[in-house]
Length: 341
Ligand SMILES: Cc1cc2nc3c(=O)[nH]c(=O)nc-3n(C[C@H](O)[C@H](O)[C@H](O)COP(=O)(O)OP(=O)(O)OC[C@H]3O[C@@H](n4cnc5c(N)ncnc54)[C@H](O)[C@@H]3O)c2cc1C
Image (cartoon, rainbow, N blue to C red; front, top):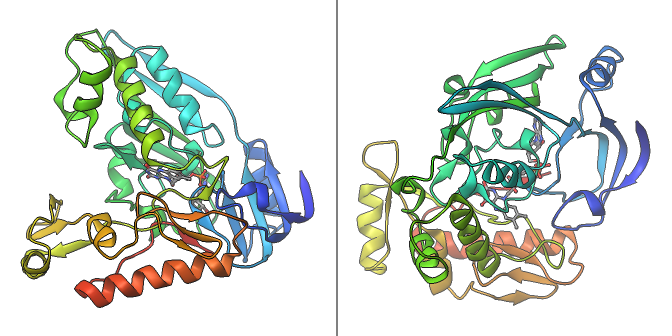
């Protein structure tokens, strides 16, 4: 379906009011094929899920490809696990809820993350110690080089922290149409330690529920923690964490520790590099719950928040101010996690 001169205000969770020249809503793969053959998917174009990881800085003078592909299908069902193929336009949170209701363990820690399934492999969506890569078998995508639907295995997606092949080699060349995930059947044994290790999960479980904890208890605990820490996008515009936690060398970390003695660090897949929590430093720099005109930061300082109809420029100015403060303080660049268009 084609719409011309579309306001994107309701298509991005920052809630900025910009227009797109045109938008096609994709209901099935045939729609993609037709657009491809007609040469409509050509620059500039942007694939859009729910706009929960995008800051539009101005009107978009091109074509928005809005992904409305729906459905899910169990491909394999054994005693131990299922393999589930999910179309790109399904909401991640609805799928997470469905898996918990069906006692399938694996993505419950991704509770309450806004956005569509198709966007999950792009930045390897993650929260509370789980990333989509942990359960991902394969990604099906429409290849814009030749108009063919292809499948790439999870192992070939080059996943990293908020990173994947779709941000590099396949950037602008792949429209994700579905993903296939493998989830274990939860048999009411003890919840595996790896799902409880992060942040306050155990504390929340202990304070609300009694042992043995159910999968539903774990899911609800994560929902409770997130609700206490993150703005509700229906009330305040945001894209969650605007920034990535920086990965620094051990030498840099030692230098940073001279200034911030108690700053924690987390291991990374690269030897001699650690991840540091940017929020720790931003809080010391006064970026917790700070208003700058119509926008600012939430109580969690990584979350740049649109408090009152801020313009894209207002939001961008705050982002740049935070990056400058951070760099001036510890000499490390704070990269954005969101896509700035
Ligand atoms: C309150 C809040 C909390 C959040 N918490 C988290 C969190 O804990 N962890 C986390 O990882 N993220 C988090 N996010 C960010 C966001 O929810 C995720 O990045 C989500 O996966 C984005 O989905 P989307 O459909 O909105 O993608 P969009 O914002 O529409 O798109 C994001 C990027 O993916 C591309 N894209 C989207 N769909 C497709 C597709 N089908 N094929 C190819 N490219 C595509 C877009 O072009 C764009 O580059 C949060 C956001 C908010 C607002």
